[in-house]
Image (cartoon, rainbow over all chains, first blue to last red; front, side, top):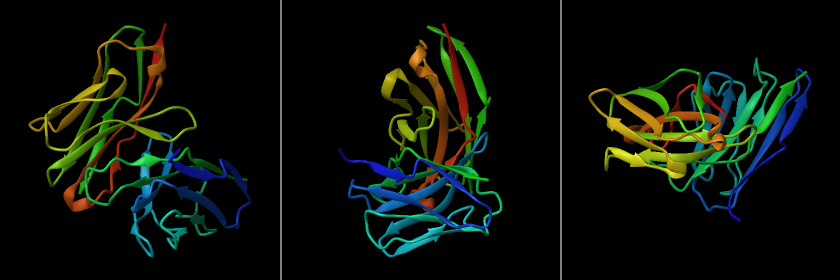
Length: 114
Length: 114
């Protein structure tokens, strides 16, 4: 079955530590996205990538980093510079980057900073 | 710039009653509009989308939405609520100029009473 796999589902981190969230898709989609979800705020775009080896900052990129070395993979690193990293993180992909395309979402990773 | 406002963070309906979720948007270009549904601790799933074809859009699970340009609205309705409709619903807007980057509303959580 085609889809998006995010891991880990739950992650606990001590303050000052970097963590990396995995996102893998087997849908052969060109575009991939990372969103952050906080209660009452909807989803906010962190980074997106329209093609391999290229990515752009979204609305809240500070304290995060990404890479896109393979079409299937778009890992997100939450660095110690992110002031409030506790949140639900969602990875998504779309068949292309032009407007109007459906986003397909993974099941999310919940990060808690202790 | 684009933005989305969902009126009401929580909505309670009786089983069998009408479900109405409100969404107003702003966009400097003709918009693409989406409704997504999220069940607890899961990713988002597309309910329906408007991409400048018919203004009344039918989606999955008996939901539909009407695009009203004069009111800048895209409200979601379902004639008869089912217990399985209990979830959080997100309205999102995109535009050709924004690529496939979507701006999401804050979400509306639906509670269905037996």
